[in-house]
Image 1 (tube, rainbow, N blue to C red):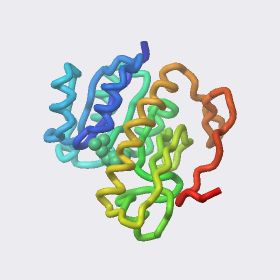
Image 2: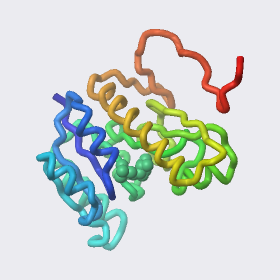
Image 3: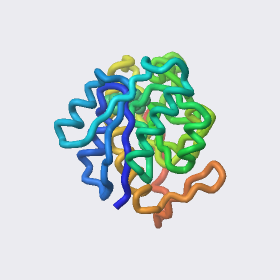
Image 4: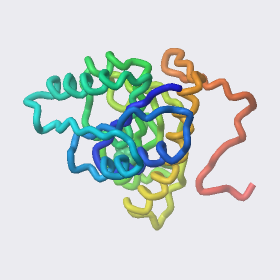
Length: 212
Ligand code: GRF
């Protein structure tokens, strides 16, 4: 069975969606860059090994990345899963886990890389927002896309209501992506991921929905 390590920074709801999906993977540990991350306690309560590598204990980004990589390598995972991990990882770290490092981002990449995606989506007046699971590369929020879920933006939406609906989709697509990853179904060709799902696309999603 493939082994994964999950990196979190806070609440850990994406991490929990992965743990609760009964995936055919062994979760070697959940690691946080913050000792007080609520998600660490939730993972511990489910019997998962937890570790904190507190970024504030390190003088530089490189020193933190190296300490984190050392902990990860002790666990010998096949894949490293960033699930609400809010530290930017340096190029050496990203290269070390190239092709084995997945992230979830709360926007339809390449739109809105970086922070405050829901606020920016509302400010820009987009009609469709969503979330993306992608391989991590040296360019922030820019690697090959595995799966996306689209969410219509409603006129009544606030940052919070939009975030809540997007998060619900994050909890659907991340376990799915990891299922494919663990089954060896993801082939990256350039910037495209081939998943090998037979069948044709189901149509077009347009928001607001049109009458015909
Ligand atoms: C999620 O929206 C994730 O995509 C983003 O930060 C949030 C973390 O939520 N990077 P959680 O810790 O998984 O609950």
